Image (cartoon, rainbow, N blue to C red; front, side):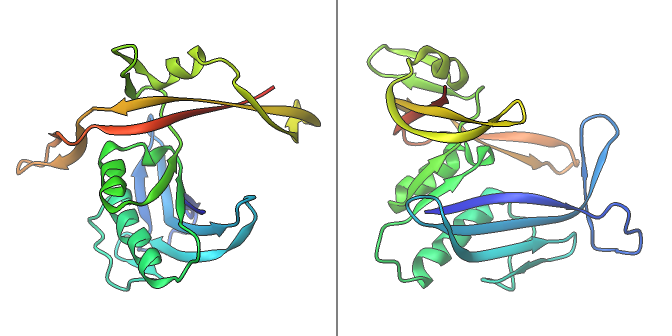
Length: 215
């Protein structure tokens, strides 16, 4: 397994650094620093094995362990496709890789790219995105579907911090077959500098919607 994520490194108090990335947050807040993009290899139990590729994005350049000329105009997910392709082509793994991606990866464009290449993936879902249930002929938000599913099958018992105390909790897992039919979207700037959204139709994806609960 390979876990992909993006982390902000805060440097807003370092006023002499000229290459810091500035991002607007809610309200008047600003996020100033670097963008760290990692690819962590793990075994089947989730134990870390090592970093396969890593990027540090500044306002001027992306410093990378796998490519010294990454286009700074690429979105996070467009660059991720390049990175996972590099990892698959340059590391000789005996087992098939499965990429684990946080909620930013809940993009139908990204999933279609993975499907087209035959790559395995597990993506944390956004609650407001919709999926289609073919057996029931209806669309439903992923957050609502998670609430509809029963506990499912017992998986294992782990120690988990609840109210600042470590307690034993049971993990239950349930799943259902879904279709993803929505258009891919991309936000771009037009000639007048105004942001607009481009919609792109694509192949319907068959997927498994998996819900894990701690009880």
